[in-house]
Image (cartoon, rainbow, N blue to C red; front, top):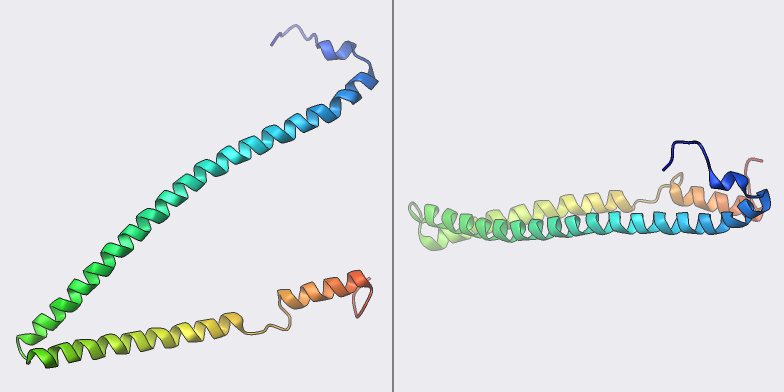
Amino acid sequence: MSTSGYNPKSKQSLLTLISELPGQITALIKAEIDAFKADISGKAKNVGLGIGLFVGAAVFAFFAVIVFIALAVIALDLVLPLWLAALIVAVVLLLVAVILALIGLNRVKKGTKHDPDGVTASLQRDVDAFKGVGQYEH
């Protein structure tokens, strides 16, 4: 780029410059879309790899929990008969599952509870205002 201050576009007429504007805008939009695609593609690869590693960690954690459960049965077997040790561990696991299910059910109920002043009601008021129906502010 020259530092002499000469701009070849300065000698063109206004109509010529205006006629070039749509092509320049199109080129700019295409360049921005390409940059966006490249950015998202790189991020998607990293997110996909991260999710894969989380799944791998979850699988290993699952097997570790199974080993710990077996360890609990073996430890209780030292002081109780094997059948009673296995029964106690199974009942404790079942109680934990029931408690987690009840907490999850409570959360789902809270999450799906109808909110009369929520987003759905606000959208309905906007649609009504657009149609010119109902109460709305001018």
